[in-house]
Image 1: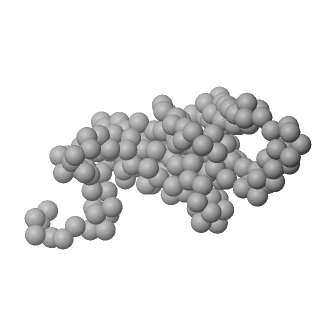
Image 2: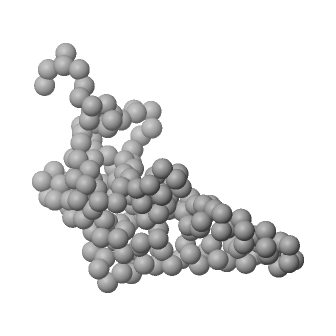
Amino acid sequence: DDPKRPPSALEVLLREDTNLGGITLQLGGRDPHQLAVASAIGSAYPSHEGQAYNGINLNCGCPSTSVASGRQTGAALMLDPQHVVHCLNEMSQAMDDIVRSTEKKAVLSVKHRLGVQDAVEYQRRKQQLLSNGQYSIEKEEQEAYQSCHNFVSRLVSSSSSNHNMSRIQVHARLAL
């Protein structure tokens, strides 16, 4: 390594902020192979102290229309939990392969929303219920809970799950 060599684009992107302690690398996408490759790189990439990232996170929570609608990633992944399981399986396998060669183990996690709803339909339905005096925050919260529960249950209990996901983080809002 040449100390005078400028950092590569990968080194700049994966640079660790030393003030933050352990760092989780959050990935977005829907291609299982690309996510697996990125997970392996993140799991093996050494920081300035020689440590790899301590976690790899699959983002299933970004509601941005350019992400969720255009690319079917982010929060849109919540609409296809079986595909998320497939992505996690591929990511986990790639991370396990790195562990065997480096003895470093990063935690695999998922971040998601309470649920996903079409914004126009959500507003239309809410206005209709309000005008009829039938709107209930309790019912809305129960629907959000059920959506969240169903998604998480599919991730952890799918018959095709053979991933090592150990954390699930909920961004406690709906993605519209």
